[in-house]
Length: 324
Image (cartoon, rainbow, N blue to C red; front, side, top):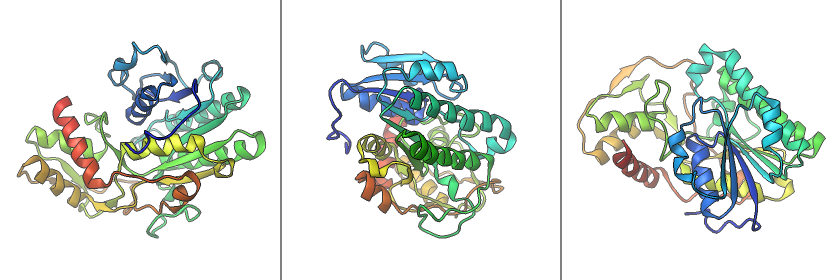
């Protein structure tokens, strides 16, 4: 994998918030395989204990069942930590439209708590999850940092606010922060069972059961689908990037573009299925097209994603065949 040659000092100590979730648990696994100490802070509201059960016997692993909305917990768990990888958040654009107050509380207040605790405990580097949703109604492709539009959902607003706080904490408080604008991450351990699940695990799960998935809209909306191992690489490299990289946010993607229709028929072919999808209504708050310019991440983070959409989707299908 592309991150196996990334080297941290021996004895490095990490805190991964949301470490029982899809992205978080994969980062945790990579760090443990590298021999580092990893503490996970997760209240299991969206994360799953089965994602981290295999790590419980590792002497370098510690799990704290706690909420980032509790500042005391944040302060306690940042003690003796060098790198914070802040993945804890509630995702889903549609759910944020239903519950904007909850998203404000978790994604904004919780992230602010973590930045305060990291500052107070003199954490070396705070790397946090942002989102491509910050581009909002900007129609330009590819999406490039510095050319953001108006947010289209409460979820997008929370991620934009996170980035503003990230810059302020970097500039005013000397907490080195780096934001990760994830573009439609997919891969092993992504939950297929929620109503709000991302399309790839949902489509794969239904096709394996010989059921028809629903495609929102006409299916011609496009996404820069990004395999999980590229995201792990980006997070680890962000921890070690030079100080000039801090106070900024970066597109974390492969740099491709696939429509939902192309995705669906690729999955059909790879799974050897012949099932017509159901077409539904457009989703409120969704960006129509998404495709990332990743040149900034390449320059400042030395980010060099190895897995394209095709390679990642094959690995993902293999995992779901074994684990569903």
